[in-house]
Amino acid sequence: MKQLGAAVSIAGLRKHYGDVRAVDGIDLLIAPGEVVALLGPNGAGKSTTVDMIIGLTRPDAGEVTVFGKQPADAVAEGSIGAMLQNGTLLDDATVGETVAMIASLHRRPMPVAEALRRAGIEDLVNRRCTKLSGGQKQRVRFAVALVSNPDLLVLDEPTAAMDVGTRREFWASMREFTDAGRTVLFATHYLDEAEEFADRVVLMRSGRIVADGSVAKVREMASGRTINAVLPYVAADELVRLPGVLDATRRAERVQLDCTDSDTALRALLNTYPDVHDIEISAAGLEEAFLALTAKENA
Image (cartoon, rainbow, N blue to C red; front, side):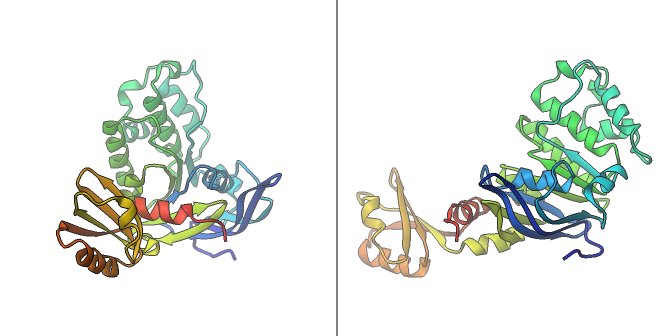
């Protein structure tokens, strides 16, 4: 059901390609000012969902609105800025010309110089797009997304092809953007970005949403804890037989036990192998939660 006041409202959204259910009946509400990370393995339906939010693809069923409007109308009004991984740039145009051309299509654009500054590409203003590296092209796409001065910024793998330093600069610029209360939805394979930057994580698998909440909540959904300890001369095959242990791995003298019940597993470990030492117990991180929640078979 459409919700008034939502930045993004998705209800019963479906998109099939033959027998492939790319998006298989999802519901999602994003409030104004939220920063939401959309995660999932390849083929989970992230990019198809993004394409329907920004009006590039029409759903087979269901509804998506952006600030109460159809995606095409929201794009025309400049309410949505999109940075797509494979967005094409005009090779013969300079960076400045490219961003200025997009700005000219909108009624209330951000000043071109401001968009270039926020994207960190002021020094590239006179360079032709054909002469840009992969990371530089991503930053130009970011400036193009920003220049409409949007209320919702949608990013599909925004830091692909960026080196570590450029990624850090990109997210610093993103924080400046969101500090003004703007809404951001970004799809990424870099889980550390989601963990550090997102207010909320939405996990997709096989076209469906399998988890939705804060990073802490998604970690809890994965359940279980990990025991790390020093225990020489014991094979992982033996350790996996301990009660409460789901999986066991060994690296040199250290073992790692992935547990469904860490209390039971720890008691059994100490009773069976009293020489075990340097024991550490940790909750699942976002990466572990991602793997656990997206690896399960469809219900």
